[in-house]
Length: 363
Image (cartoon, rainbow, N blue to C red; front, side, top):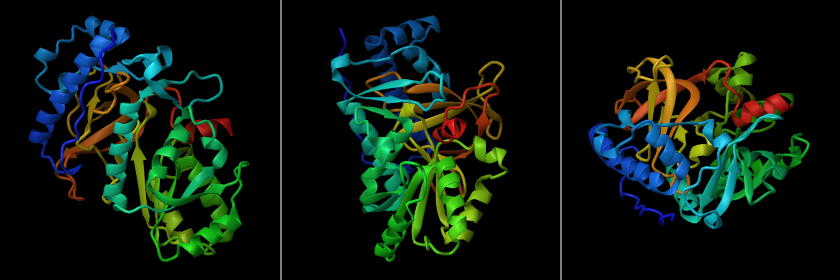
């Protein structure tokens, strides 16, 4: 018998305010609740926790929490709610012939994800809705019941839009007239641009180069994410990306973000100092590749992502296939509390999974 969802009450705190002692006490208790809940409600998860001798009563720190390898979501339908309670199924990005993760959301989990995403992005963008230019085509979001990661990202970020248009036509060409009209109408407002990194660069920046200085986006904020592999292959790193956009259209407020469909809503935004940040609802651990022991600060390792949001499926503790470094906690120069880190690519021989990277593979 599947139990009803555990209660989820959002604490009345700002997202980046708890010091590490307070954060770990709050976070660990909720994580153990989630582990216990998913063991009772997902047979596959119960069996996996049994195989690693998990006992929540013996966990004293988050580094001792086990994890599910992210590829398991490609192999199994992992649910902790009855199927008839699922209101949305999301799939990860994948190239042709590649299996994809399936993530099952009930009403409550979808609501949690939307609320926390809203709080995280609003802390960077401000509390008011703003005009939104989506660097993608409208056909991407047509299927409302089964979302790709790309469609889910567009739909999730659209909650910040007072109005929105798509910058690209369905053949991925630039909607020049629509963009010009949109920029002129909103020249005295903050505009949000949103898209996936490779698509933003390939289909927006490269086209803007042909119309250099025709578009003034100095009043805009670009939020982008989804994988850098193809751009790194083209010798475009984050600093180059930012300087090129500033040169071509005056855009100088750019924030990358890191997240995955298996933990939708739990994104890690890039701060003004160039680091990705955990919030009160997420945490990160880096582990060594040889034995999964915990890395030191400044040491490169595989990323384990933890989130308080997944209730309808056991996605609360995931070992990714990404490599990163944690640079510190509570002392980033941007002033935000929590861990701050950077991503440095994928494990060797790991499948492409970022929206940008898988799109680039297909095209």
